[in-house]
Length: 331
Image (cartoon, rainbow, N blue to C red; front, side, top):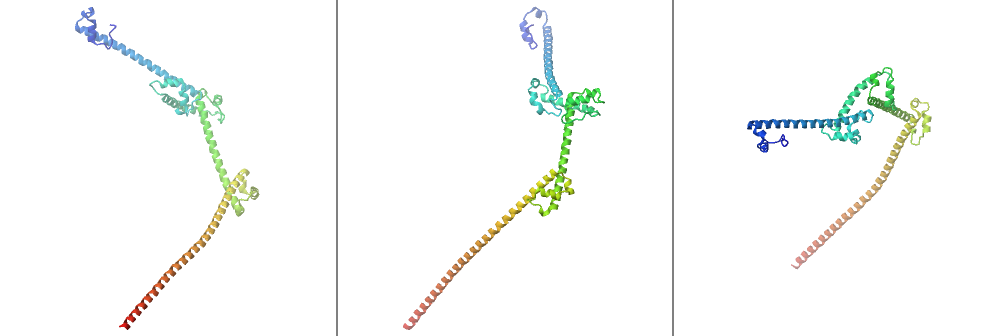
């Protein structure tokens, strides 16, 4: 029996047992029936063993995932994983932990999937905690220097803070403090933008009024002292502090100087262009006169040729007449 397994074949077992007394005592049908029943029990035991192994492996993998979740919880509670964190923000630190390596080696959810699930649940939990914190009328104000521990101590001592609020996890309090700080930063930035916009409008109004007041007397040679004397006591100047008045004048002075430089450069260019045009005109006139002389020489040469041709024709005609007269006399 020790040699028989769940994969044994009847013909081989039958040949191995040979004429054993137990075999001889049974007929062929009973022998096969007993063999099949025994093999069935072996197969059942093997399946149970395999099932136990699979269950043990699943429990081991689950423990690895639970260990990684516990790591996430610890770091989240310690404030090392912010509520708004994404996997790429914390992956490098988490991958250095032993729990990450164990979780990465099991066939279930990956460390990133476990992280995403954890953060989704954390945000849902925080959403409820935030509603509780907003309902505390005696909640302390939050500044840029406020820490989560300071806020936790203050919220716990608030008059209407019940035990449910006082027992909120530090991670939710830290997330709430971070949210209030971000909101305060956004409000401060918006206020700063509004102030800069108002200052810009006041500076441009000051510059426009100064242009209208000084007119052509405002040049690159104008000094701040001269401007200060002009605007002293004027309503448009009182709307702007002196440092901003100086800034407005400095910008305007730079614009005026740039305009003067541009105008001077244009005038210099125009003068240079006029001189070149005059020189070009003289040179063009000389070229014209030269061409005229050349044309006259060409025309004179043609006249000489024509005169020489006429003289030759006249000599030839006289010679022919003379020859004709001599021929008539001899005849």
